[in-house]
Image (cartoon, rainbow, N blue to C red; front, side, top):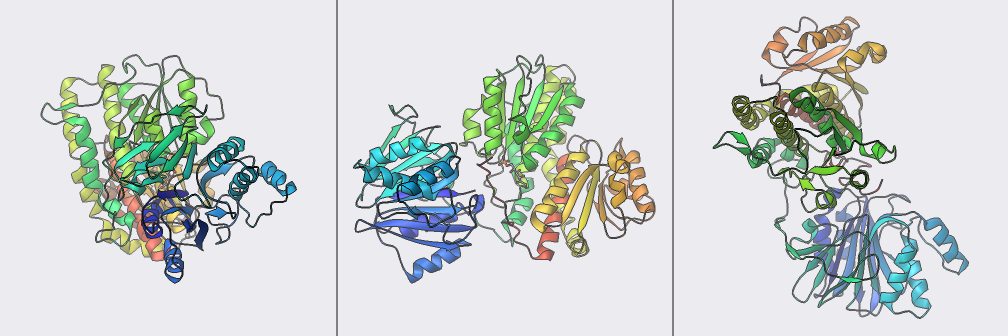
Amino acid sequence: MCGIVGIVGGRDVAPVILEALKRLEYRGYDSAGIATLDDGQLTRRRAEGKLFNLETALTAQPLHGGLGIGHTRWATHGAPTENNAHPHATDRAAIVHNGIIENFRELRQMLLEKGFSFSTDTDSEIIAHLVTDHLNRGKDPRRAAADALRELEGAFAVAIIFSGEEDLMIGARRGSPLAVGYGDGSMYLGSDAFALAPMTNRVSFLEEGDRVELTREGAVIYDAAGRNVERTVKITDVSAALVDKGNHRHFMAKEIFEQPEVIGHTLSEYLDLVNEKLHLPDLPVDLATVPRITIIACGTAFYAGLVAKYWFEKLARISVEVDIASEFRYREAALPEGGLAIFISQSGETADTLAALHYCKSRGQKTLSVVNVVESSIARASDVILPTFAGPEIGVASTKAFTCQLSTLAILAVRAAIARGQIDAEEERRIVHTLIETPRHVAEALGADGAIQDLSVDLAKARDVLYLGRGHNYPVALEGALKLKEISYIHAEGYAAGELKHGPIALIDENVPVIVIAPMDPLYEKTVSNMQEVIARGGKVLLIADKAGIEHAGEGLWESVEIPAVDPLIAPIINAIPVQLLAYHTAVSKGTDVDQPRNLAKSVTVE
Ligand code: F6R
């Protein structure tokens, strides 16, 4: 998703903006640009593709000036070309924008009629012209920006600079996040605190509808009603160190291999190992009596929610609904009085999940979020948060955030089971021990890396792949398929194993690998008989199972990957590891852009 950086004050700010943009690369983008004010004149450089291209353009023709804005663009309206890259500018104003201007067609028509001409296909360009239109009417820049912003409809964040104004930048937030950074004699704007970390750790987050006027001296903030407001300045603990790949070839590999550590970190936040008990913050509802839980998320986080449904229902006997946020927000769901709505999000900025959260709040639900970015919009809007401690996830494909979400949700489900009298103190103690073994089992599961790398060479030749699982392994199958398709571009589908003969079995032939996730558990026999149906039809089966599961699988497997035998409670976390590695190595075999797959963004702040 687009990233914004702005700096007021300093010497030549362009190289600093470029470095900050690099910290926003993880959000996904396909072009980039920077504009500065050089001797009162707006100048800019833009480039299609990766930041390296922008860096090359800046080396050939450096930008000067102590005030500037930068942008990484993830295309929405208009192709990812240099011409469509931000900043967009007239001779009077330059802007960077994240989000979508919903009424851009009407505004563009109005501006065309006034004689403005447009040089890009973007919705964003109209902001530069609209501001210029207000300036042309004799308004000062602050007023021109405020009036222009008022005319825009949609969800966005914007930064604006003006020719001749060496000490002024306007920022605005409506739907998309924007942080204000406080330096000494310089001020900053950024899509998140992570972008600003090398420059400052003093940050305030604009609230919905806020507009900020930045000068070297500080920030003046106005709320949606135009009132002058204060927003708390926090000291963030976001690390200033540039996250690197360590000794891995890709961030995704690094993040997959970080899982024992970060799952351990996450679990230890919520387990009191001394007293062998769970250790969760106070919740906004009584889990003993809550009538229903509604879980809402997108993509991989949604699959974490699906696993959690199995846990909540089985362990705590609570009725749970799980919904994709983009569907939930428009279907006017009926929610029970006193219900709990749980939101799961790595970034904490996913637009649909945030909108669903606002809907639930307006319908009287208590809200709890499982988020990785604790200063995110979803975190700040929730009654209570259970942070995951995965650390920054840079690879676009979510891996460590998923397993940390599962770890957190497992503990929450156990807490609900205790509250409802389904689990006693002794069982709690046993579960604490089971949970705390998870990092070790994850490390064991990572031991299959070499074997998975070998067989992924063959998998990379497939055009279609099916994933099958039952019970809590059904969401793991869905996650495996999502991971494979998003980074290797191989078409893949996840199915509940029992659903196979209701249609998908027609797809089976010797060219369609079928990946079956079936460790030895109470549903093993059922899944294995579905697997045998595939083998009987010439299907090429890769079984992911523990030793006993592989031994009892019968004849005809194409391949198998052994995972450790673990307690069913933590099995989904362990079983996620081989499907992540399979997707990773298959993508590497195919030579795709693993960390930034085509068309995808890390943080989806538009609906
Ligand atoms: C897939 C993936 C996405 C995200 C989804 C939600 O690997 O990363 O499906 O899970 O976009 O994002 P968050 O968790 O940031 O709300």
